Image (cartoon, rainbow, N blue to C red; front, side, top):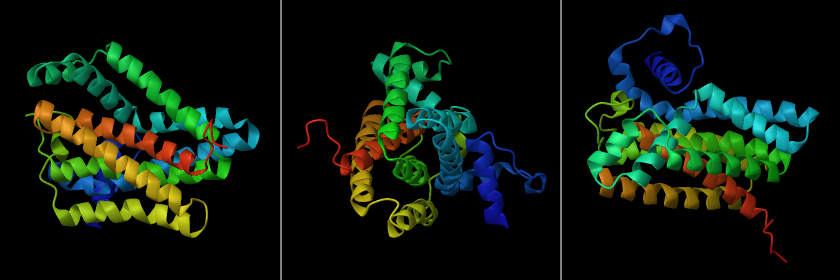
Length: 260
């Protein structure tokens, strides 16, 4: 029952979905809720996949891709997209660690954030639209949990760089056993999709390698520039690795423009 409460606490923190009243709330539950970040991703991915499937049944695939992306943004309240935009602004416009943190804290969006958000959303929608419909549905179900696992890895391995912030309640030093729970809940959907043939093993392996490389690159930049991570950094990692996963899945289908 306690684990269920932790999951609902994570669901309430990371999305705008309602939770049962019996769950209640204790502030210290947030310190343990990050283990269910990928499971929240599964819920978001399932809802986005359902929107895609319904839209693709009635409308062309590009429209379904845009609608499913919009559904994911609505469900999370643009939580991760906002973090990505702030990270683009902070690391693009700040020279010192103090200035980077100051810019990220500013609620206004700058040129780097606006351009970055437009580019990543365009890339996400275009890539999903290029995938076969069943593969796109499988990708949504697998990638949302896995991309959140990549962000969870920062909580597990890095130090929180801000005295206060929107991710501060989750910023305790995550135990390896907690990260293992996150890894299992992220891996199971992807493995089942591969076993049943909805997603190829090559696509999953390529996506994991590419996303891990992108996550590592971002993490090293965060440590070098600000000494750790913030909530905005978690959103940036989730968004970047989500797109990288989609790109790897598309590349595994050998649909390159110059492919013979």
